Structure formats: C-alpha cells, structure tokens
Length: 279
Image 1 (tube, rainbow, N blue to C red):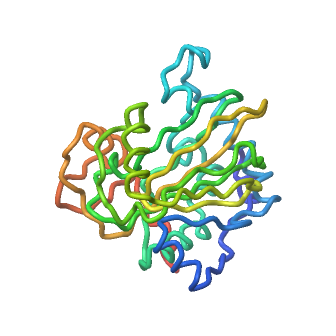
Image 2 (image 1 turned 60 degrees about the horizontal axis):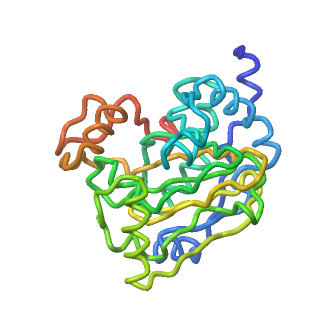
C-alpha cells in the first residue's frame, strides 16, 4: 500500500465514551460487551487488509478433521500489526487503547500482542481457559479486546465468560486443551459461577475481558468464516513475572524479547498505545 493510500485510512482516534456503570460492571464481572466500537464503514476498510494477511500467513496444512482440538478451534495469526503498516493503524488505534485503559483504571497502556482468530466453517469449540497463564506479566491490569470483523449470528455468538472468575486469579496452569475444558468447566460448576454469553454481534462490536477471566467459545456450525481480531493490553509499568511454566517462557521470547523477570515488560514489540506519545 502506498503512502498516499495509507494516509487515507481512518485513524480511529475519536473517543468512545464509557459510563461509570460500564466501568463498574467490567470490574465486577471481568467482561463487558460494547456496541459499535468501530463503525461498519471503518471495519469495511480494514477487514480486507487483515483478511489478506490471514490468507498469506495461514500455517494450517491439514484439513479440519485431522487437526487436534486447538488446531480445529481457529486459524491464529499473531501480531498482524508487525506485518502491515495498514493493519497497524487499526491494531494500535487510540480509541481501542483508551477503552482498555479506562476499563482497567490506569493512565497508560502498552500492547502485548494482537491475534487474528479466524474460525473456519465447521471449526471446533475453543476450550475453557485463562489467557494470563501464558503471559509473563506481574499484574492483573490486563485486558483483551475481541472484535468480529463480520456479523456473528446468534448461532455462533460471542465467547462465553465465567463472571467474576477473574477474582480467583491463577486457577490452573493447564494450557488450552480438552483437559483444560474438563477441569475448568468443573471448577465453574463447583463454584457456581454465572456463565454469560452476549449472543449475536455486529462487525465492530467488541467484548473486553480481563486476563484471568475464564472463557470459551462455541464451534462454528455455519458455512461462513468467523473473522475476529483480538488485541491484548496491559498497564504501562508492569514488570515481567516469574517464569513458572514453559508457556510463559515461550511467550517471553515471542512477545517480550530481551525482557527479564523483575524488570519492566517493555520491548520494541510493546509500544505505549495510550496516551499517544507526544500528545
């Protein structure tokens, strides 16, 4: 894309105003759904940019039926913002980062990484899990934006969240798998945690959930791709945690290169995205 074409892309800096009730609901439940975080027109412009990257970088070489549970769940392409200046204008948007900062109640946020998560027609469910078991971040000030780039029907729906599960902190080191689904499903039922699902979503709507919030996602029984972009944020000033699992050791290498336990979680892959530098 030429510089001239890049300059015509929407900047996405107009503020999305949250109410105090919305902030309180998020902090109580560990998740929230917000309508029209990006407009239909904005998504229409950025969707093909992200979609082209997914097509180019898709690593799956087996049909769905030959993959394991994780492989059936989605096509997963991380850090699309590093692959395209156009995609970066969307992922690093001030509007999204400001929402993340306000939900967490912090002044400044960095990006951990993004992911395009495309669930294929007939794709499997995403097992129950906590995102933050992977992240070597010594803070509970973490949040993930999950935004569909296409309308999602009631049949597919949003992710399912276990309300208030973020208050439990680190529940299990089990990575996303059949085992995590069984173990954490039993935990949710034993604790009597409410399971919340937001149903149909329009392109540009978004859910936000805390890093410790238990969540899962249904399979895709439709004949269309479920196209989603996720962006993970954390409070600026967060330090790198103890590397107590192989998952966290791996994530440190991938997403916090050069950072060490006890020092700032701030590599060249983790720019401050709110407030925008220089403002």
